[in-house]
Image 1 (spheres, helix red, strand yellow):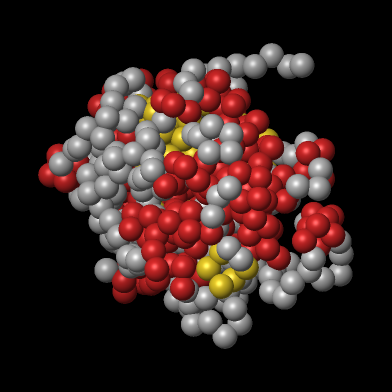
Image 2 (image 1 turned 45 degrees about the horizontal axis):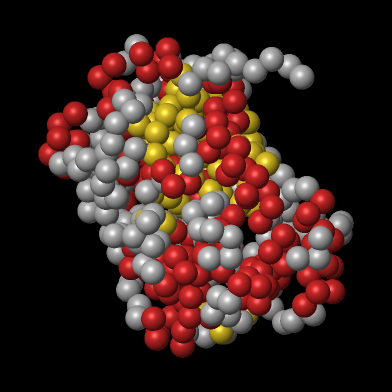
Length: 470
């Protein structure tokens, strides 16, 4: 086995667009550009500092990443285009950290973006085997084939298995949905910001028992006649840097977030063990969490805030068990005890999670990273989990891949609330992006676009579209 280097990697800057309904209002070059500009402004760098670009998307032609990155400058750097199902964004973070950890580069820009079609997720390729074909075959053998898209069935069946094994009830899943919608009210980037009662969650249209509509992320297959938005458009970005890069900018240490532990894993033969929970990645999630926590030198009990892949409420409940937050088979007791929200054991998805924030596939992992960076900095001052020094991110893709990141503050301390005034005074953005979603101006962009290799032609009509949104 090749020797492994261990150069620390930090999240120095993050940026998001608002997550919106897929109505053709925004194109991916514009969304990716906005998120990237914000991340570089946050990191206080210029694109000339970036040595590698990583583009993360599931739906789009090859080299769509170059279409986004060329807008910042045409500096001839390597640009990778990545696709790893719903774990695509975090896969980009893993690639960036791996390059930095092994000394290949000092600065990477990772951008995840997605322009999605209305309607439930479906394959673009009807003339070849699906990567999920064997999993689907096993699911149908175990549970029968029902009408509607398969993704809700995978996770609903996993929830049913947990109910049968451990005594969870349908109301436990509904309570997770209720909490997600409560949390999203304080996230300015969330696609949905409406609070619902538990009764409203339970009585919303049934998608696949025990999952009702308000327990599902918007990309995940609602009924054909539903007026509920069915997918999400949006983008997120992160600047990842080495220890040497950060040391050269000591004034930014208070905002730098160490990627203290990280694991990208795929399935073992447990996937095909005829278990509905294993078909949605329970085994690889548990193994990745153990590896990332071990590398970071912490345990699940040290985590006070996390962002997990709650594509459905059933998956969040199962993840509480798989990630080690609950004793085996006791995840539903955490939900009943209020231990997944403020005042409890761990605040799960303060952003609202995929259920409420939205789920533009390539951007999701970057949005999770942004939220946890803002939390550990103390910038998410309207939804802060105070006293946190460690945070965990979980991003899952069926097919399969899972990424678990464990983050720590660069100074090793605990977070505390930072005022909007202080953030505005010390940053390039001019406002606190954790609590306010603004667009970007031409003047903002010129601060970070390449000084030596920018092309106005490469921008197309992006500047005009962004200006119209200000």
